[in-house]
Image (cartoon, rainbow, N blue to C red):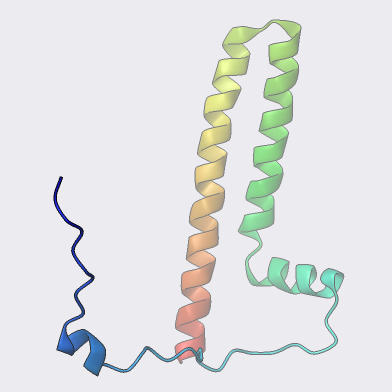
Length: 105
């Protein structure tokens, strides 16, 4: 058994200041409730709620098909659900990128 080594901190690591914790200027929306925020976000990126609705619809229909014993349709719908989830994720990332680019200008 080898003896334990103490942690080594190099001088370069100790000399750098910690990264800043303050994010850039973010827009604030005072007095905004859940409903107003949901509507604002939906107007900014309408594809995300649409993708979520499609994903849930396909999932429910796939589960109903599975319960009825139609395994072929159920498998097809589960694959379609994965595609719908991918679309939703891509829409989410695209909306985040568009918002980041818009805020830099």
